[in-house]
Length: 171
Image (tube, rainbow, N blue to C red; front, side):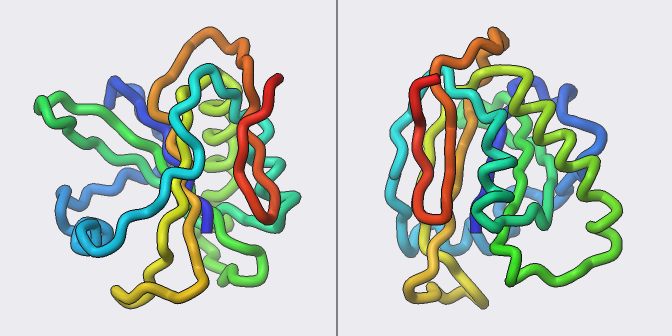
């Protein structure tokens, strides 16, 4: 599984094409297991990264977008910000969901718009994969966080992925 999350400093700018996750913070399974096992940072924070090729790379590596949502959060200082998270899984693990099949093209376009419209400070983590609250041995989730937008779209580096790794290359 691959998660790609973009941070939006002004929550009013969250894309309207992505469903909003209205659950209050602290109600997800992720929070419950946050203290159990930590992931490993596999890409340190890197400035001026372009993510435009990432969607095509994921498709080439056999991944399909299966979900997208936006959510308003608060930082430690109480300021609100937004996140937009896209979830990808291996093609052979995808169940057909008619509602998502209709929503996927708009979600993919939103991903492209966010990725192509700016360069990002980007980092990535290799996290354990959980099913039913338990770690699945040998399974991992790559979490890519684009957490600071640089509106100057001239990326100096490119985020790339293949079946085995995620990396940043010079543009």
